[in-house]
Length: 186
Image 1 (tube, rainbow, N blue to C red):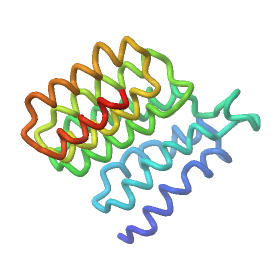
Image 2 (cartoon, helix red, strand yellow; image 1 turned 90 degrees about the vertical axis):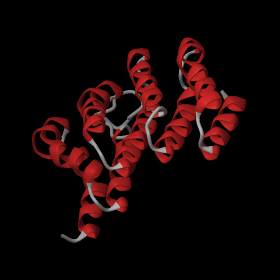
Image 3 (cartoon, helix red, strand yellow; image 1 turned 30 degrees about the horizontal axis):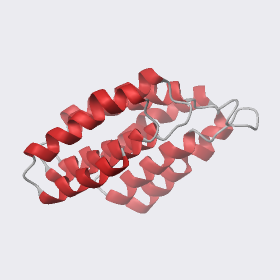
């Protein structure tokens, strides 16, 4: 019941995974890790997001840039896919915000394939149409970050059009301001 323990466990998972290996992590810890994105305490959920960023830096041979234990494909297939499915079932908006933040972390992986970057951009584009302004705002910020790594086709065919759509139709002034700032950078 202690949220600090849950946060500490979530934060420690990358270190545990580096010692136990990817197969052991997948078999014994992945389910609990994905569940931490739905924790009722924000600090636990944010810890899970930060851990997602740390997984890409774990190496099986000492150089994560050449031989990552948790490569971008694995992270998208095993974590990203599950999170996108969870997003659709979440009625509480703060959980959806956490998933959007997780996808922003996934998009920051420099070894992400074009296929997976497209899946992230499409997911974030859908999240930018969420009913809740806070989710839309977070999705716009995540799309802005993803635009830095996405190819020109994704920026021109998906990111800019969703920004223009939001700018023309969103009623929330904070979301519109975030889009205006993102358009200057995208």
